[in-house]
Length: 345
Image (cartoon, rainbow, N blue to C red):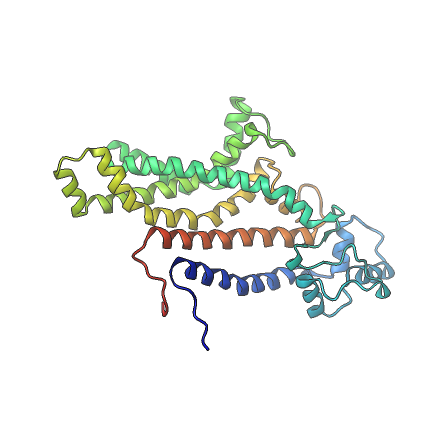
C-alpha cells in the first residue's frame, strides 16, 4: 500500500520536515570530518589544552581517552548516536566521549573543560536576541522606506532613499561596525565601550542597528519594487477611481498584495543575518555563539583550536539557517493560497 501525505498546509509542512532528515545527516558527516581531515586529533587536543610537553606516550594516551584509536566510521556512529559507549578497558574517558548528537550532546570542550552543549546554551540566547532585534529593525524601517519610495517615485525622496539603500547594501559589515564604534562610542560617547561579557540594552543597540543596515536596504528595495507592481494593477486604479482614501488603497490593498514577495525575501535573508551576527559579535564583543566560535578557531591571542566547539557552533548555525529557510517556505505557502502543494508537484 502506497503511503500518501496528508493534503493542504499540514502535508506541505510534513514533507519539508522529513526533508530535513537527509540534510541533517549530510551536515553531520561534513562537520564530523572537520576534525580528522585537519590533522592528528590528539595533537589538536593537546594544543587546545595548551600542552607543550608532547610525547608519543602522551599522544597515544589522548587517542585512547577520546576514542580516536577507533575506526572512522565507529567514531562517526558514536558522534551521531553515542554508541558504542566509552570502554574503560581501552582507556576511553566517558566524560569526553560524545554521547551523540541525537541526544543533544555536542562533545566536550578540551579548551574550556566543559560540555559544548552547555557553552552553546549560554551563547545561543544572546545570538538569537541580536539577530531577532536586527530582524525587527530591518522589517520596520525597510517597509516604511520602501512604501514611501514607491508612493514618491522619481522624486528626490525616492532617489535619496534608494541611493541610501544601495550604499547600505554595499557597506561591509566589519567596516561599518568599526565606524559605528568610532563615531558613537569614541567620538560622541553615546554608548559604552564594547566589553566581553556585557549584554544589556546599551550594548545591544549598536550591533543590532549595524547588522540590520544591509537587510533594511535589501528589504526597502524589494518593498518599493513590489509596491510599484501592485499599484500599476487595474483594481488598485479602480479603487482610487471610486474615491477610496489614499491610505486605505495603500495599506489595505497595495501593501497586503505586495507583502508576499517581501515576506519571502525577508525570511530567506535570515540565514545571512546569522552569518552577519558572527561578525557583529566579534566587532562589538557580544557574548554569543559567533564570538565563541571565532575564539575557538585560535584567534584573540590563542593559537589553539577547540574543534568540538567549532563543530558545535557550525552545526548550530547551519540548523538555524535550515529552519529559517523552512519557515520562509511555510510563510510563502501560507501567504499565497493560490499555490497548490499537492501530489505531483
